[in-house]
Structures are given as C-alpha cells and as structure tokens.
Length: 147
Image (cartoon, rainbow, N blue to C red; front, side):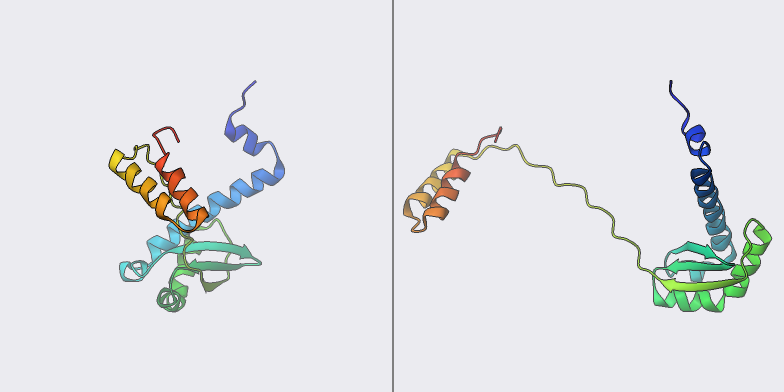
C-alpha cells in the first residue's frame, strides 16, 4: 500500500504548513534574486532565513553583500510585495557564511604491495628498536588486496 510522497506530506497539518512555508521561501528567493542587480548578486549568496511578525531575515555569505543588500532593501521589499505571497514589512540582513560541502569519502585502494616494498618493510621491522613500530611495519608488509 504505497502512498505518494505528496500525499504523505499533505496528510498532516504540521507537515502541510512546513511544505507551504518551504515553497513560499523558494518563491521569495527567486523574487529577491530577480530584483537585485547582477553586481550585487555577484558578491555572494542570499538565502531567506525566517519570517517572524513581518520581519524577514536574509542570510548572506559576506559582509560586503550584507552592506549592499541593506542599501537595496527598499528594492527587495518592493519585489516581495509585488510577488504577493508573504506579508513582509521589514528586512533584517545577517552574515552567515555558507555551510561547507560534505566531502566524499576517500576510496580505499585495493593495490597490493610490490615484493620490493614488502621486503623493505620487513627489513625495517627487523632493524626497528621500538617493538610497536616493528609490529606496524610487519602489519603493513602483510597487506594484500583483500586486507
């Protein structure tokens, strides 16, 4: 009995309100981006943060962009009012650098050690004065493609 994702999202009042707010914020971001000149948009990213009691918080990626956006706040307000979905009476600009992207995990290599490498590691293990270091060299020398 599979249900469509849209049906699941609309089945609960809280999720319905959350989805509606997300769509409104996406439309709002488009309206803000379209209202600003290219030289301001080129300074970094602008994301709508939250809307509480008619005050819209915009999160920007740099202090320079925050300054320029504060000067252009009347233009942004006019664009938001023209879009008409949200009732915004004032804008607050906050600097919030973008979150770093998650790095992809590094793939482990399945390469075997060459015989020369294994011999060198075993020789180093024999001459090492520290027993823990000697054991580490022996473990490395025993590595194969499956380990």
